[in-house]
Amino acid sequence: AYTFRGNVKAIANDYEEAITDYNKSLELNSKNFNAYYFSSVAKNKLKDYSGSLYDSNMAIKINPEFYEVYIERGCAKQNLKDNSGAIIDFSKALELNPKCYYAYRHIANNKSDLGDKYGAISEYTKAIEINPSDYKSLLGRGCVKLETEDYKGAIFDMNKIIETNPEFELAYSLRADAKMKQGMIKDACSDWRKASFLGSEDADKLFQKHCS
Image (tube, rainbow, N blue to C red; front, side):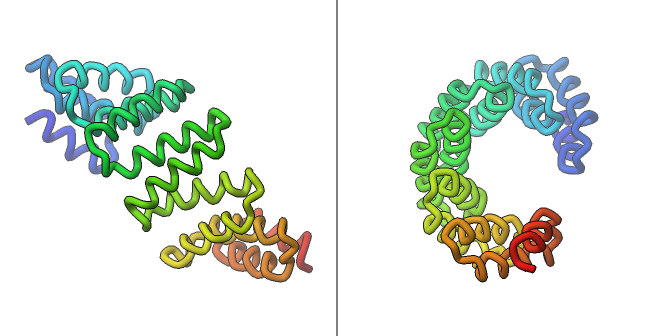
């Protein structure tokens, strides 16, 4: 009952009270996998990454076959700057669920943080192959392509995002950056104008600098 009530509170973004209920559940049953797992999720939300790491470790001791708990532990490790450890956990999640596209995205994020940009692109691509509408993977891949000077590739990814998220100002800003690098000043200005219209102050400044 406490775990269920904690989940209701977590849905309402009341993570601290949710954790209180998960702890009560664990007082009654120290082997309650769900209480540990959902507590790790809530603690990640509150940026208590060490606490999340502890709870996910405890959950895995009880049930090592649930892929989502490795996602939570990997996220905690990533935020604790243990990128290599995070990659191991996201890879374990993929062993348990090969269709978990966001595990590939998380691996990509960590590889990018470690400086393995082309490895990151490969992992983002795997995520996109499973879920072509995963705009976060498209965004991540596009950003890394910008960093590696693949401007045409970055424009391609931003185009894909804009097709399904036409109000996503960051995609316009990044596409403008890629177009500017290719000397497509008029098109870049058009994208900065759109991003500015959607609320980007940085895009507005770039428009004023380069286009007026």
